Length: 79
Image (cartoon, rainbow, N blue to C red; front, side, top):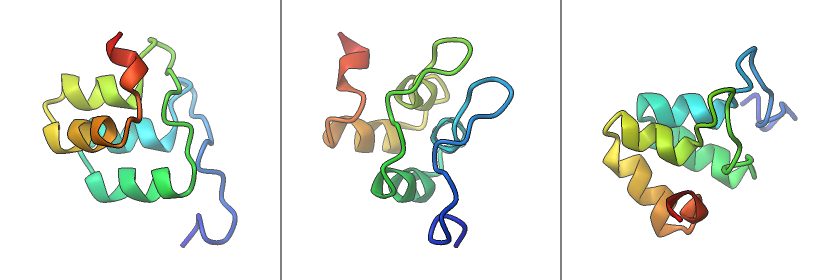
């Protein structure tokens, strides 16, 4: 609802993390898909240099990682 009302999908927290970082870290595929559809910056790095793809892989959320890779989102992270 907030995104539909104009909330910024790329609002940074104190660690330069975006909502898509959090969604990827906790493994919320539905949230990741929603944020991607709202054009969230999926290759953004947090304060530690982690991208959403890397966070999802580090936490073992393979469905999220697969979605990001299947849609060529974050593919450059693997280079």
